[in-house]
Image (cartoon, rainbow, N blue to C red; front, side, top):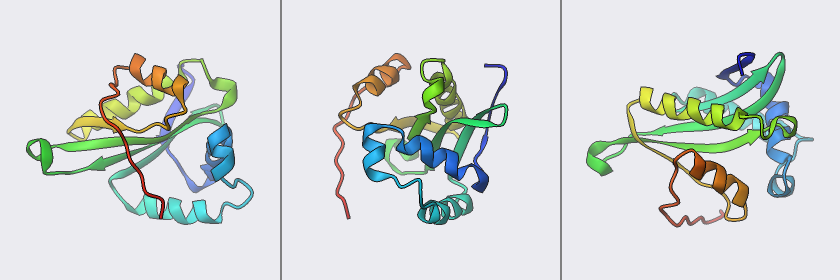
Length: 150
């Protein structure tokens, strides 16, 4: 893992990020790697928000992983700040290499650096392998999540 760099994503990384988002059964249904326009708009919005951290893991010149870390100040839990980890993806050639653990360690450490008291994440109910992965890292399946598509 010494040849791995975790850094802020750039607009030039978008094609690789979207390709990873689309490279699984769920992502294949909801992502469109052939049209980067909506992703470019979203990236520009993320880049303007200091509480959004879209990062990539790079080996050599190749983007091999990504995640988004969102910092959320709040009143609950005695005014605690929390973070949410979203969009964790590892390039198919790198799965099982420890890269996912390394990216998650980065996110937890950055959350600590940002004075967060809680790190949260959601995972689709069908992603049982991901659930085992997160539990191995110490995350607890403590809540039931809900969503409303708009």
